[in-house]
Length: 224
Ligand code: DC
Image (cartoon, rainbow, N blue to C red):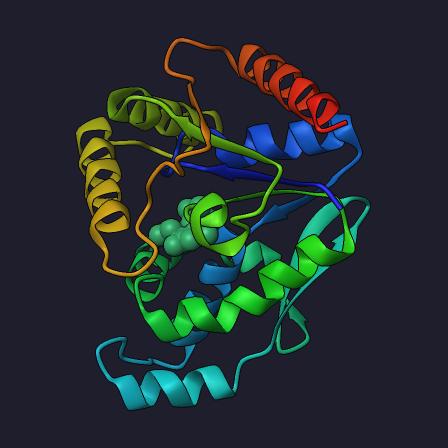
């Protein structure tokens, strides 16, 4: 099996790019952020306090997360319920940033992620895929863009959907999340030593997808 790990900060275009690259290669796209978001959804629904270790442990004992694919699109299930439509809100993003530093949560999701890569050729995106989840991945990419550009893109996305956007607030939230993701004790966001750094600040989406597909194709060919 071939695994392509794509890590990087939020808003760098990882999921859109990873999905498109996976589509071109005929690989399965695995969005690992959705797993953390699903845990966050359960915690929000049940008022679980992330500071309370016993409550967190108990909650994880009641959670079953599963990934299934419908028309090639990843669907995430929480205890048998398809929660794909419930995990993109801002409240979930905030909660996901609070649950993802917890070692028990990371451990809880590790096996599921590794199993996906054992069964299929995958393009897996996240924060620690190349460093922790799939350290043996044949191709690793660290995808980034300036915080200003990432906030601007997110604002454009909101506006396109008719949602009002406060750019300054969004930029602060991007920087806050970067800080949380890069400074946490367990599996902090960082570039793996053998990962290719790709900065998309000045690229269009299409340019980035072409660049990465070319890089991945050359890298896979070189594996022989
Ligand atoms: O990529 P995203 O915004 O959907 O990720 C949601 C949260 O989960 C974010 O705070 C980072 C975290 N995350 C993580 O810690 N490790 C991953 N492999 C994927 C996401």
